[in-house]
Image (cartoon, rainbow, N blue to C red):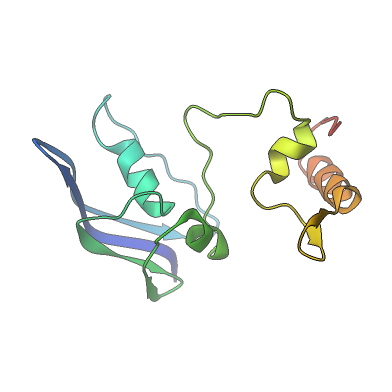
Length: 135
């Protein structure tokens, strides 16, 4: 089964066709590269898959179901993540604060559970063999 499938995706801007009839199938545990010249529409396609912009045409299916990605939260809920080409960090924040920015684990809806987040980051770092100082 395909975990992600896009079919006939198009995005047009005034005077520019960023994506035209793009189709892609992604199977579980596979790696894909989207390559092309500057201006070929790679970033536009990724922004569509991450819910940052809406396609003008086409469909997106995740785990066999058609989805309507209206925001990054929709993509994240489906397990779709994105590392931006020009990654932006909050310079005055710690590594931990940058990692959890926008998805902070909270208690009572407003108290950030930093200890829990720190342990999770350490666990993930260990699993991938990364040496990261969260503070």
